[in-house]
Every structure is written in C-alpha cells, then in structure tokens.
Image (spheres, helix red, strand yellow):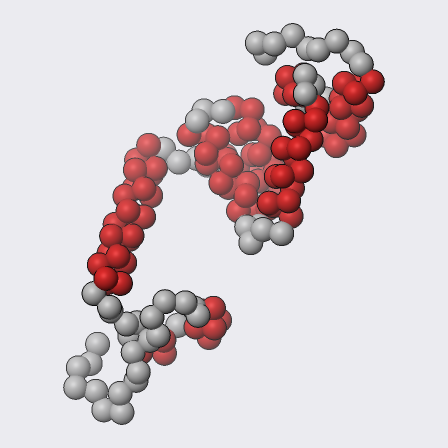
Length: 160
C-alpha cells in the first residue's frame, strides 16, 4: 500500500475490529480507509442502501463487479468478489471474465440495439400482436410502458 497505517486510536481500533468481525480478518484495504473511518462507513451505508432493496440479485451484483474488476485488472476486487460469486453461483462462473473482444461485442450490441429501437420508436412502430401472443404472460404483464401493441385483426391481410 502507498500509505502508512494511521496511528492507533479508539476509532481506528474499532474500525479494524468491525472488519475482523465481518470478514474473519482485517482486510488490507482497511489500513487506507482507517484514515477516515467515517467516510468508509458513509460509503458502506450508501452501498447498502442501494443494494439492500435492489432488483439485482447478489449473483447479479457479483457478476457485474467481477467482470468490471477483471477488465480493470483489479486483483483485490476480483478475488473478494470472486469468492462472493462462487458462493452465489460456482467457481467456474467466478473465474470467468470478459476479454477485449467480448467487451467490444457487448458494447456494440447495446449501441446497435439502442439505434434500432430509436428508429422504430421515432417512426411510431407498435409492437406486433403476434409478439404479444407469443410472449409469456409474465412478460406481457410487466411490459406496461411504451406504445401499446398493435390490435389483433379479425382477419389479417399480412401474415408475419
């Protein structure tokens, strides 16, 4: 680490103890954060507020952190979150990362999807009734936004 650990104080020792209680050991990163335990605790509280009622599962969160950490070549977070991911999924999932090609493809895919959807929306395309009929009821029930689907014709001239 680039910083020396701060001098011992009641606040610093309490901070280290909370890490040991939570992790079973005092994480190395705690020596840096021990300079301002209040900032760490505020950050942790905000993170907990975001994740405690998140639509993202613990597995989803771990996948996102692991993928990001591996691309940043952040071994600390890769290892810490890889452990969490392996507990939520399996060890093979935790070891997997995205290479540069996969990152490019994911980025390009999303960009193309956004462009495609923007053109469709700008031109007023309504979802096809056939899509509504083919989609699971759970999907139809959640898609309550955007344009209403095209009405199902009694007799259709065009079949799709």
